Length: 412
Image (cartoon, rainbow, N blue to C red; front, top):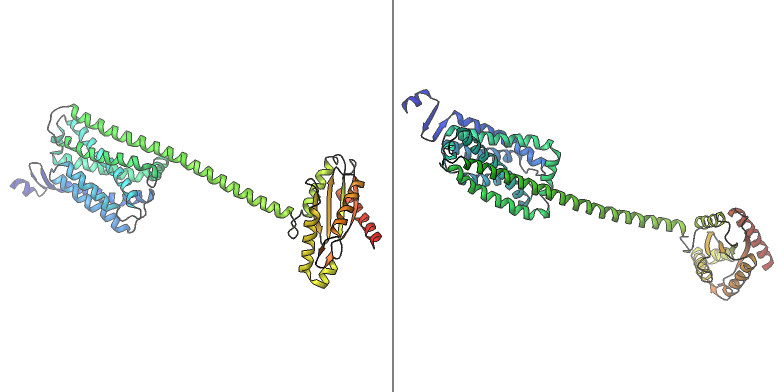
């Protein structure tokens, strides 16, 4: 003991150790404090306080495993305390504890798995029991240093690995992860129990092999569950996205229909607009006029007089009453539209010119018995017959307009 103290390098009592070798895990934990912050941000865990996040990531875990490297205390309590060190480290993120515990469990299991796998590999390489491996301070330092280095390397590589990053990130807030969360708790507990194997001095070569296989299988099943949950969540995401797109498309269709309705309907009277009427005329003529038809041009009487004496509000009321009353005498196939002002037009498919005149005379006779704004409803009209040879809507309207003026002159 006096010779070791004179060398000033270390003090080693049986399986206890205090020396410069402990600087390696301490330095690695200080680095891990920085890299873990980057992993938190990448996984979507923003920090409340970056300094305290680094401090709680580097100091508690560093002290715990440095103490373990110095004194060979059982691994089970070390792993249990390490879990609470992880909780302290993740305390300064803004997420819910449900989301935090998912990440804490997952990362803690990875750390324990790497550490115990290294202990098993060292036991196989040295051909000694696993209890003898961690009974040596040098191997305790090596195994924990390699495990922390692997965590640091994972933290550095994870932001550059799209699929693994997306798989882990999507699980943190997923409702589907509840059964998987229970499985992670199960793995954490059983890994702590597995750590008891690392303390044994049984000289059975297959024991470290069984431990390594157990660790590999646990990691494999965790990975498979993560990938499966990710695929389920992606399917749900695409389904929700599809429903959202359908709802958006339906809304756009409704908006388009509303705009089309505004374009096709006269805002005041609620009957068709001039634009719609012209489109219907062009379509009717492009099909050869069907079995023939008639275009009726209407000029409403007394509108100017009502506007001048009673006001435009009463004039608008006169237009509305005329449109609704006149439209009630038309058929479902007839197209009735307001061209503008007091001018209206009607497309009567499958109706010859003479029949159209008879129908309009009958409607005019019926409307003459109704009053609105202190006046009877009256109008002048002109008719233009449609044959299969005509293909110009504007020309037909002009002819019906001229005929309407003749009707107006005859009625004066």
